[in-house]
Image (cartoon, rainbow, N blue to C red; front, side):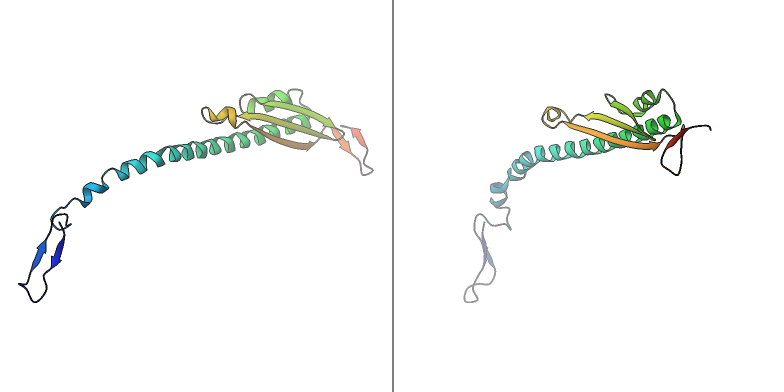
Length: 153
């Protein structure tokens, strides 16, 4: 119903026609269902966004584990431990590849790990995380001239 104010020349008051808001007309009935349709369109996008955010947090945590594993391995290799690679592998995420390389007076440990994406997106978005740590060897004493002498002297 549609309500209009009666002009001053006529009797005072309000006259309502069918379809007005004041008397519970049909305007609300025409809008019914639009919120449901909009939600149905937006909900998959929100779910995808949430999955990607969660995956980002998981990838960041795995990257931190790679950094920690590289540090553990470099420290163990610098001390001269023979099991430095296995110590790094223990601290690394599952499926990680650990490489220990001695470069003169330094030891370099590289940890690489896969980070699969959520669900079927994992195959389309392969991400490989990596971290490298370098430590000075403690079993070699460095002289001011740059040469190394075995420890202890």
